[in-house]
View 1 (tube, one colour):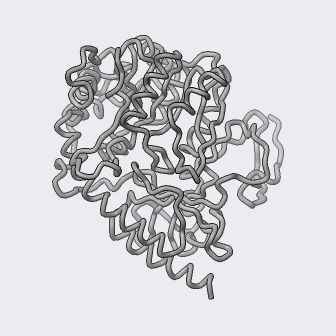
View 2 (tube, one colour):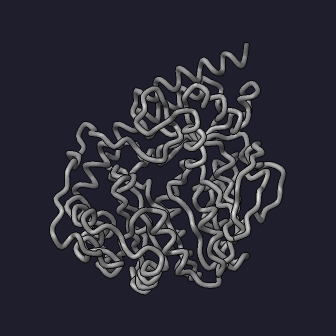
View 3 (cartoon, one colour):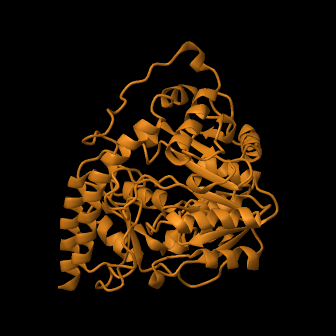
Length: 436
């Protein structure tokens, strides 16, 4: 077996390291949250450890919320649950997901989802991976900035070609339907992948704009791959007690419109550890996704799927969303006010999700870059995510000295409110010290 030593494995983040490598394996980069968590662990961070403020976390707080359904704390496991689950998922859970979408988004519409329009997966990345594996030789558009894990996802499969689409902060990261149509036609896109609400900016495509996006997808046979994991965290609909958005609302024919939706218990139900997610799409696409699952992952956990049947209902979703809207709405405002007081500037307030995307360019050095801010905050046991991680660059094909988002940071208001208070006090101290 050949072995070699390599220097500079992580020069992107300013660290020259020596490490043992094996010629048969490539260096697999860490996604943003994994990178910052790993760096924090070197300084003693552990999940559940006291004293740490994890504003980098990609999960919501998972404990009880006022008005929310009671949290599930134990699960029965039947004897036949020891067996493998079907690769597309338990039929009863697939039926439950389809019925929930019909109740929430498709009342009065003639075309309805069925169990055959649903595939169950063991986590959000797995559901996206299955879909990516089922794509053909196409140009696939993706937006900048967007979810960090898309970078490796878009690079590992070689059939499709990733095409970046730039969003501009001075335009509030908006992308109107006419711009989408130009991209689809001009670049010959066969599919578009995006998170909606966007992770990290919080921008939401909804209402008439989303209806037009779906229509353009249908008219141009361009698949919309919609990551809707934050779709129950909507902040631009004051007065709506259960604000939710989904492209499912605007689909005409569930088996003909090329709209593929990803969601699950991870964010909207606040059960990330269950690793239960689903894909909702035309039956022909679901068949391909399930076939990909048969060789990629083999299917999800049968006991967890069985337990999920009881809570994947429209009633549960509405009650949980109402509680999220109240609790996370307070945390959103707390973090917005606190960051502005520190001198962090925003291109746009988050319309959805539980992140604030802010520029630190006006802060004193070394806090005026995302990585500099991250390092300084980490020394005070605060975890954030530098903005450059969201500059999705599959295969590092785009050449440049620095990221467009090197001055940005993603802050999460997923943690408990008390954690946000503590973090803001510490950040105020860090900024004051840098200004002295």
